[in-house]
Structure formats: structure tokens, C-alpha cells
Length: 198
Image (tube, rainbow, N blue to C red; front, side):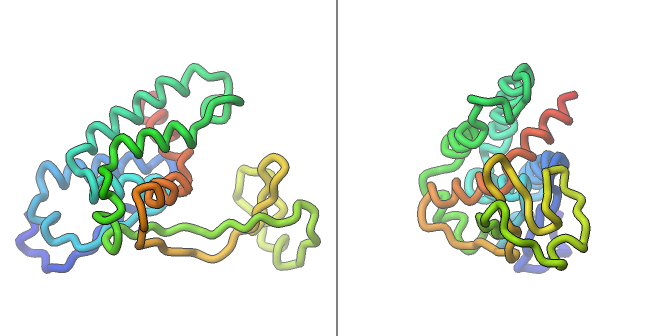
């Protein structure tokens, strides 16, 4: 496998939201059967839950199965909660931080820098009741969150504005890498595992 491919090769894990679990299966399949392809990969990227898989794939490929088991364990904790991952006093972000710190090696940031590409959208905290422009409200919205248009959304007391698309490829420390991963829409990875288990 891979003999017809030319180096360098960039690998994009494109599934997001609850489909992100498919990227974990794709990564494991490559590790099991696609060594010829992996040897040609110079960069790997993803968005949302696939960015988490890309980080594990690049920095701790031997732990992809452990990562899946950790996610299953997290779902076992979340499933009985009255409001799932958003139940008060349950800290999903901290749980994911612990999982990533356990899975990723100490030098993960070195392994990932210039090889891991994470795409995201910048969020800016804005005044909750700031005036809106016609541009903010005329485009409609498909968001399930309480919205003020396609570029603003509210969560509790805070209002956020969607900014520019950003690409992250450099990570100064393991903690920096983990925080980038956690901010890659971490909630969706748990949703994906829940759907796969149901």
C-alpha cells in the first residue's frame, strides 16, 4: 500500500461533530495496514474532533486504541448524568485535559509542530447587547444555540462573535498543544462516541 503515492503527502482528517469518531478508525486502519502511506506523510490536519485524532496519530500512534478506550470510559461517566456533558458540576473540559495529558507524550509539542495543522475559527468576546448591523442579521443562522445572527451567539452571560478562520501549526509546550486541542470543539468527540455506542 502506498507504492503509487509520491512524497510528500499531507493527510486531512475531515470528519467533524459526531462523525469525528470515523477519523479515529481511519487513523487506526492506516497504522495497522498502511505503513507505506504513513512513511510519506509530512503533515496531518483536522478540525474539531478530527484535530484531536490527528494529534494522537502524529505524536502517540501506539496509543490510538487507548484513546478510544478513554473516550468510551468518559461516555460511561457522562451517560447517566441528567444533562449529559452539560450537567452542572461536571467539567468536560477538565476530563478531556486529563485524557490528553495521559495519552500525549511529554514532547508532543515538538512532534506536532510543523506537522500538525489545526483549523479553527477565532471567537471574540463582545458586549451582549451591542448594536447589530444589517450584515449580522440578514444571513440567517443554522445554529442550535440562542443566536443574534450567523456571527454572534450567546452562552449564559457571554456573547461571542465569530472571527477569522485561523490555522495553528506551532506549539511551544505540551500544555499549549493540549489547550489548542481542547478548544477544538471538544464536546463533539463525546457525542460521536455516544452515537457509536447506541
